[in-house]
Length: 549
Image 1: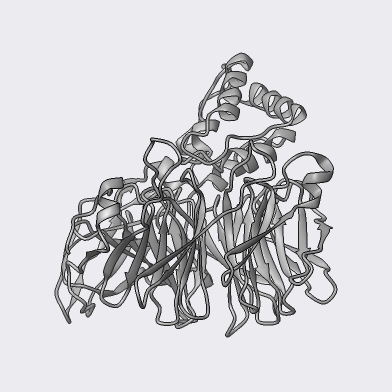
Image 2: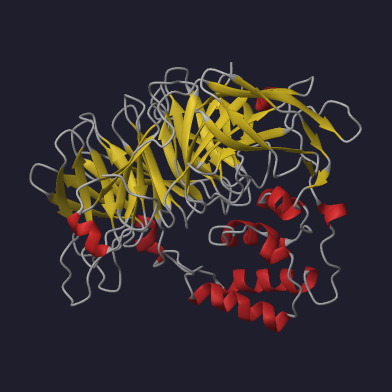
């Protein structure tokens, strides 16, 4: 049943079985656009990003101009597009249009004659690079970029006295602004941040200067050899996790309306599958909210539905359309509630969950529907939440998880449930999501203001950290191309996806066309080793990066 983009309320979710949004532009993607990008003097613009966008169907494809300024945007469906180039702080006419016909190559030349909107052009990592050094800088980058959907700009552009900055911090600690958790600050952290903001962003501090502060970005070298394709999802979808099956189908956890999305990149069809509602123990009607997402060996989806009065794990079989539900056990402490961030499927058939809301790891036996609750030791010892976040299973079947608040890696014996913890060498690393490489070793992103990718040797438990080229990268989600053993990591603060080669110890960072996307999950495509998928949580987009090699 064809439907326009839109949010589906609780009543419609209960009734509809699946909502398919058919391809509005056909499955054939044989058109292209070529041309030349120039600077205002007429010289070729090398390393400019060129974006073509079909507003009617929500498709955007971007490439980088080559050494002679030339570009080609391939694999486009027929239709009307806008086209724009940007680089070095300048952009071409934003209203330029081009027609694409099936099997034909359209042409368009572009001149970088307009100043870019510098706020849109900048990333949070670039704003961070312009912040004065001081004890509070890393804390602000680590703790405040998680929720501010417009990045650091709103913080560093303000000029307030100490009292007003203090009030702003209090709001951050008490108001979740649509996110799961408010910011948790120690007394020391609060003082350090407040001292920094009052000193460097007080009423007498000069305002930001676009001419002085704007980044003049060109994309060259290996980073320029890519094509990025983005799809607009329905308003309010807020995609959190993506997973890619063996056929290259991208599955999406839409976190706001509680919907599973299915995107076929060949037919360009997006199907929405509502998660059936749960009955609340109160008169208030419950609404499902998908969050974590994983695929098992049988191609079944496992999701966390954690914003209902009765949080639960959800299994969905695409072959049969059947849903199976596994209610989470009650937390040990009544003031807590389940908040699952990551799901992993063990080779022995058990399903594992990081429950940061209740500070525990959950193990599910699907055959019996029994859960085992494994508390995080660091949280019990310190009486603060360790916040278990990412998870990965190494080559020997050990379960590893990241402790976001305590800067530790935890390891669990899958049989006994015994937990061993290992300290990270870098304080305030704030480790996030994890993946396993072809050799069975575990990798994780360090989101804090440290800019590092971490590796755990499965045999020795030794932890090695590799600095990303940009310090304030916001390394977050990790996925591995196991065919070539290349490590992918999303750089949430820098709006990039980076690829790390463990053999050469080198990174390539690929800029994304949409800033402030808040990429919470990336997934290497098992059917296309040069492709990695990602979710744009803040921008209602799902996309993939193809590396040209």
